[in-house]
Length: 175
Image 1 (cartoon, helix red, strand yellow):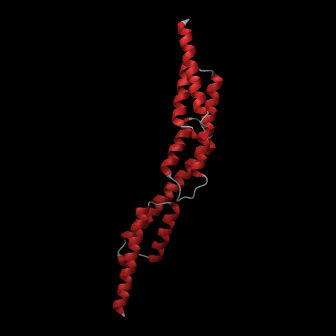
Image 2 (cartoon, one colour):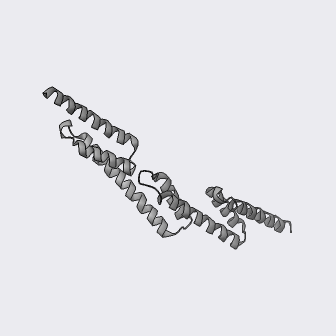
Image 3 (spheres, one colour):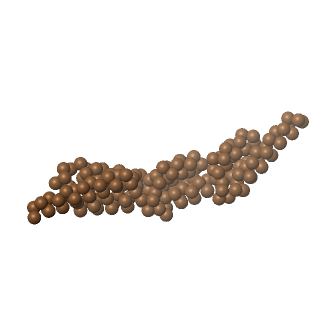
């Protein structure tokens, strides 16, 4: 009898914790909700309450994932954050279409950033006379558009400025 009372008490506490975690709405800490959900499952909380919590968790994580990539320009996209949200969504069984779309966006942006960085580096590695200023200028603009790290953009801009200044000096000497 005492054991039954203890089990009932533990289940009730887990259920209250689960409902409390769900009641936070937009302020829900998803790691806390997941842990609370696991605890509720392990102590045998009513299946319908657990399913309701799982559904809410899945829907919220799907929405957070959509918000992480849909409205953003390439430059504004935080790939680490997006990857974390993709992983969260996979863990709770979110809609595969949303996960695939987010993964595709992640991979496309990552590839665009890598390609642009490589192109800028290749242009910067050329000897001064062979650096094409219009091409380097357009690569710098493209790098900003796709969200290449600012230090890479600044390094390319410094090269552009140095080559421009060197060519101006050479023209001045020729006159």
